Image (cartoon, rainbow, N blue to C red; front, side, top):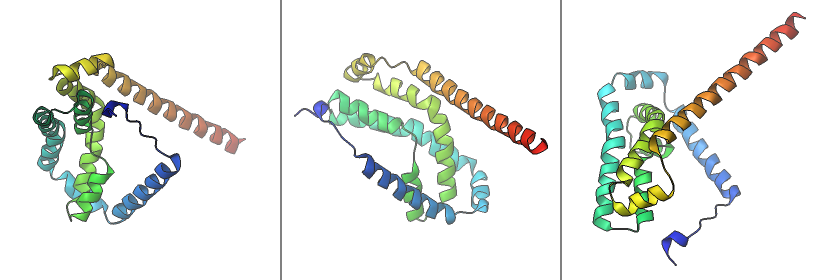
Length: 181
């Protein structure tokens, strides 16, 4: 069976268990981290800049080189590049904690990387994915426009934030009116 024909079916119940376990682990790490740890992390802008640059520049470049060396199917190569372009997540923080590293710095880098990923991930995927003709053809078949993707995700996020803010303000006004009346 070709790799492109493989279908993964995730059970919603097992995904819920996985999410609960990850949340419990992250809560444990959060309980072990103090506000002072984050203050110390802010005094290390060079460490944060190096980590974020490695995440968005070095990791996709190394992954692209691996796709050239290993010559996987175009869909697998594009998948490898996609994963390399993704921002770090909770697992990096867990591994940092287990290794005795600076968890506050790791969490701060994760937060900044996730914000930057709104713009950098589609651009990185489009750039590295178009370096090989086979993966470029696959990118074109899914009609990926990196700039459009970055701005649409940004504008929809801003709209959701503004909408939520408006609902909160409206709710506050209603409570004030009820408490006065």
